[in-house]
Length: 179
Image 1 (tube, one colour):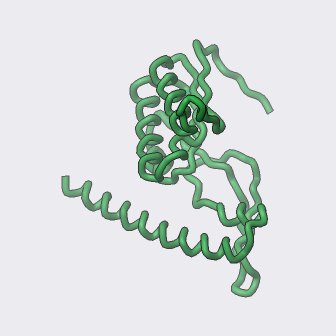
Image 2 (cartoon, rainbow, N blue to C red):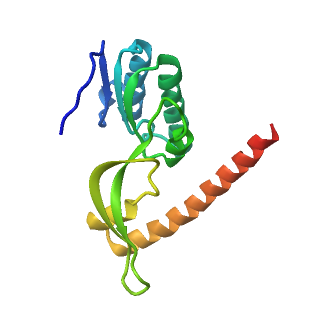
């Protein structure tokens, strides 16, 4: 309903997708070029807003870039900001960071019984504390009319990928204990 904000010396915003293909610059290049400008010019008195940094490349590269930029903004620049990401690993990594408040958009989930069909998700458009419990991409795909055979196939693939990521995270966690 309202917002009070102390004065800032600059406002930097990186949202949306655009390219300069005629100049040989992809959407991802433009995104990183604009981000680099923010990192060079922002001060501790700036306000920075980044939306979905790293989505234009492979997941591992995108996650790594998003993580590194957020770390740099918080520890080196120390500015105020908003950093939206779909990378759960990035949100989890920063959930206990003293300078970052991790939030997610709340939803109401109704889990069906065995004969009722898919999970029903109602997006509440409210900001809630903590890391999002999971993604609901298949529900959005269903709302968009993507088609049940495609959604079921995608859900199977997503479940397999989540298993691989969890295994990777466990391996990294165990490896870090060795040091």
